Length: 401
Ligand code: HEC
Image (cartoon, rainbow, N blue to C red; front, side, top):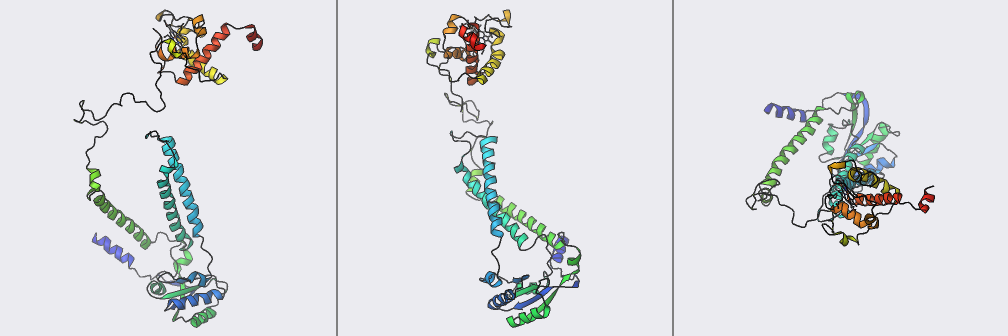
């Protein structure tokens, strides 16, 4: 551990002894006061230099104007990613609660806007924050390049402490060393330095695997993880009022309890509970005469008849036969049903046939469990077709041609 710490301190405090090349990166000048640096920046910008930058220990009002800077582009980055965050999170909520994992809570709609607003806000802020930070590092600090020649120079040490500095880069079109030096002097610089590229700047472009950089990143991650692990554990589980939630008297699913007589922690639904989307059949067990008012809600259509035929052939034909004549394949294994073409059934309302399917009749059992409400009506429509085909009128025959 001690060895590791020593190694880290050594890496962090390592002087930059890398040899500098002969190639000039730029000319730097140092100033004592904010006023001086603002005037100097205005002078440099006024001469038409474009590749220069100002370094100050803290932000200075009016510097953007003095440097003649355009409005920064970072606002667009923030906006685009913030908006993206909003859309993505809304889509996520819509998919999760509306489609993938529908939860019935007091009959509320599965997906709606108001409960999605907090997470939408969080998503927007999250993406805006991350994009703005990364955007700033890329746009202004020029990541992935992390080894600007002015890093670790004496100049950098001073402008991050108590001095103010300007660097005019040598690749500016207007760059003539003596002119720039003169400009710095007239602006009141107390020191002028020449900054050269490192040898490595000219050879390998982006040493992202710089040891110092790596140690700093990993060190930060480790420290953050350790600190948050201990503080969160302490805050969430040991500090009042949070421990109240942790140590609560509750009954978990499937667990035993002495609270209820049958020692089961889970309860049966209250009598009369109706599941969402499943209205109980209101004529259950009632005689035929009571269903006169039960009307067929399905219009006759090709789809309805085809579906009805399909369901009839599966569920009804074994006993009733494919044409409803009571000659099903079961033969003697089950009491033979009457033909569906008898006067009684012909005169019945649709509701009456539906009632027999739903409720059963004498030995015929109820098919309510196997056949959905809609399909029962589809079958009724199909039975009407069977009946008409067995008693076709002359008119039907002409139409069929
Ligand atoms: C297991 C054999 C069986 C199946 C399957 C079956 N039924 Fe029946 N069905 C019968 C019997 C037997 C009767 C006569 C019941 C009685 O004695 O009242 C009957 C009676 C009926 C009646 C009343 C006829 C009348 O004259 O009173 C209708 C309508 C009917 N069934 C329709 C259907 C439909 C529609 C299906 C398919 C969803 C179906 N049945 C499936 C055996 C069956």
